[in-house]
Every structure is written in structure tokens, then in C-alpha cells.
Amino acid sequence: MVETIIIKCSSCQHHLWVSTSWKTSRCLYCKHVNLVPSNEQPGRTFQIRDLSAKLISKNIPGIPDVQRNSGISRKRAVLCGVSYDKTKYRLKGTISDVKNVKNLLINNFRFPIECIRELTDEEPQDPKLVPTRINIEKALQWLVEGCCPGDSLVFYFAGHGSQETDMDRDEIDGLDETICPLDFEDRGMILDDYINSVIVRPLMAGVTLHAIIDACHSATVLDLQHMYSAKEKRWVDNNPPSGAYRGTSGGLAICISACRDDQRVVDSSALNGKATLTHNLIQEINKNPRLTYGALITSVQNKIDGAIEARGVKTWFIRKFLRAAFSQEVQLSSSEKFDIHQKEFNL
Image 1 (cartoon, rainbow, N blue to C red):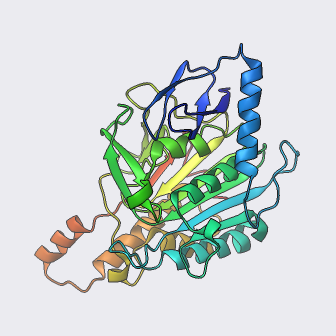
Image 2: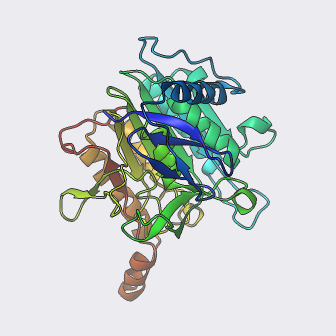
Image 3: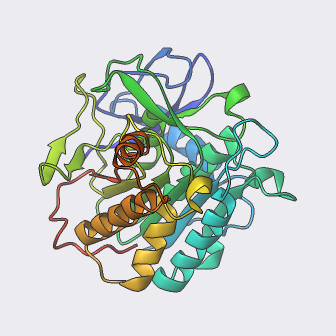
């Protein structure tokens, strides 16, 4: 099992999840190389862990305090919907998507309402629940804090996704995938490296995380080790060329994404919202709550394809052009391989 701790970057002061097996770690924000304390420095490690616990559990409104190793399995979720209202990047439907996912978690999967944290830019809003970069990062830290065997965690994001040039040479395509918080123009985007380090690597044995990412360029936004290829009908390796560890600490992380890394999500407003991952995922789960992952992904993909085909275009040439322009392939990735036609989807 890989042990992880939190250290503070000596340059920019951001907190970073690192493995105790590493000697150095490059900061995800400023790219400064930090020394990682060894297991032979227990005093320093204890101080870092104590600092992280204070940092993560502090100032989280509307959420009960998390007790470490309580022995009680919990369900917990962070739901982010960013509309970028009053900007040129405005999106429709993301806030209602969050509300619909919340209802799904409560009604279908028995998530306690007090253990669901919503971040939207709907007004009026508590400043601490606006989906800014710092608020999303704090929410992700809270999501995994104190997790125990048997826990089920969910991270949902509806908003813009993008890509940046990979500076660490740990991406197969040379690009880091990102999600865009409300203030991304001022504060920057949240990198896949950061998301992996915060909500994937700390997962201990018996803890399951599901991420549902309804955004462009989102296939590998959690940097999970295995991608399922619908064409090849098998899992393909997504480990970084650098050999950097992207796995969990024994737990399971599964991500359902709206499209491939090189694709954009179809504008839902052009198709009355019927081509979105969120809309079709909820619809299919409500219709058949015991779907396997394979059946769920196939059903959602068919619904999206059908919505695009139903644009009313009758000319063969234009239909062919639109299929290429609006191609959107739902993606499944995981920290472990499993039989997608046998394992039932459950949160």
C-alpha cells in the first residue's frame, strides 16, 4: 500500500499530496521542486499531517465535522456546476444539472442531504460555496478527508474543460486536462495532476470514488491508470510515460466523462439539453437502477447519438458533416480493471 502525506510547497505555499516513497515532488502550481520528508523523519511527517487535517476541516459550511476512522461507512459528495454567468463563456443548464444529480444521489442512492456539498454560481450564494478555484480545491480536500473502508464518495463537475501543455512529461498526448472554475481567467484552471493527487491517491482500501465529469476534454481528467476502449472492447493502459504513480492507496476510483480528451461536448442548448452526459445518465439510471457499467455507458452513448441525429437534417452529406463536428464519445476510466458487463453501477 502506498502511504501519502501532505507537504507545503516552499515556494508558493500551496499544499500538495505526495507519496512517502518519493524523494522530491514538483509543485502543480509553480513547478518548484520540493523535498519529500522520509519515513525516518516521523516528527516532521506528523506535523504535516496535523496541518493538513486543520486545513481541510476548517471553514466548511453546512457539513458536519469528519471524524477519522470512526468505523462507520459514509456517503459524501461534492457537486460543482459553473454557468460562468455574465461572461463570454456562459453555459446553460449546469446549475440545474447539479440539482438533478443531488436528487439522484438522495432518492436513488440514499446520500444524506447534509453530506452533499453544492458549489454553483447561482445568485444569491454563500461566498464559500461559489465554484472558485480555492473553493473547489477545499471541497475536494474535504471529500476525501477521514475516509474509511466502506465509504462511497462522488465528485460531479459540469462546466468548461480545457487542456494545457504538459510540463512534467507525464501525459501520453503531451497535454494536461483541466476543469475551469468560475475565476479561471484570474486564478487559473485546476489540473488533472492536482485532482489525481487530492482525491485519487489518498483513497485507502475499501473506499470507492466515482467522478462524473460533464465537460470538454475530460476523458483523463482524473489521470486514472486504465481507460476502457469501446472499439477494442478492453481496458487500455493510461499510465504516464514518466512512470509517475497515478493510482490509489488501495481504494477504487472510477470516472465517467462526457468525451475523449481531444473532443468537445455538444452544446446542449442546441439540442434542448438532450445530448448531455448528465441528462442521459440520470434518465437511464432512473429507468433501470441495476444497469451494469457497460450497459449504462452504451445506453447513454446511444441517447446522445440519437439526439444529434434528431436535429432534423435530411441531407446525407450534411448529416455526415454534423456527425464529425458533433462527435462525442462517453468515456470510462478506472484505477482498476473490472468486467464492465458484470459489475453493476452503484454509488
